[in-house]
Amino acid sequence: MINRPTLYSFRRCPYAMRARLALLSSGQEVELREIVLRDKAPEFLETSPSATVPCLKSGDLVIDESLDIMLWVLERSDPELWLKPETGGVEDMFSLIKACDGPFKTHLDRYKYDTRYADADKVSERTAASEFLCGLNTRLEASDWLFGSRPCLADFAILPFVRQFANAGREWFDTQDWQALRDWLVRFEQSPDFAAIMPKFAKWQAGDEPIVFP
Image 1 (cartoon, helix red, strand yellow):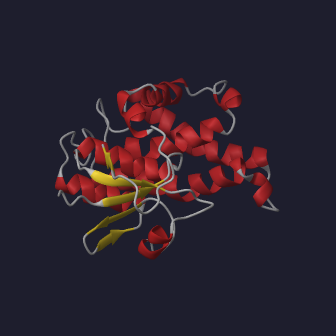
Image 2: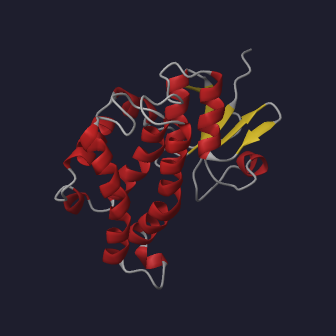
Image 3: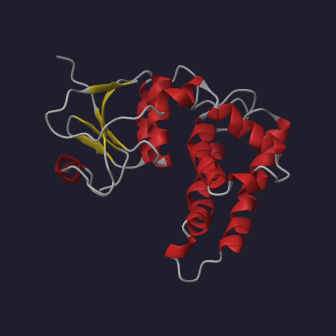
């Protein structure tokens, strides 16, 4: 019997999408367990310190942050050189990802879920989030991917969140003056990799037949 790591995931979560993208790129197989956020499996709650997806368990090791899962997977196997950007360096990638996970994600949440925040103004939050996207567009006007002619860690760590932003108001998004950004997102959404990480799985419960991913 093959002893694979376990990945607790949720299909539409951009953080979980990150993890699945890295697993796909590396070729690292896991047992995928689809979690329903409104009815979380007790085994998942016992495993994840934060009770959030994604969560990877390998033996006694538990990794509860999406970027840490990406790095753990890619440091073991990185055939597409995601950790070796064509231009810039690893720290440059981390700096851009930090900007995505920090200010941009804050504004994205307050834009997409504005009714959850008493002081959130949807248009103002969208405008603030767009500053980050305009910066990405400027980079992408110079090359097809954020750090050169081939994708790297930064692209696939950030793309799921740009997609989430776009889907919060796609008609408006598609009218903005960021053609390079839109082209980048469309390439991702129409790619075999995106299709490979997005199949629908039933909610996992103990006793189910294992689902091997990828």
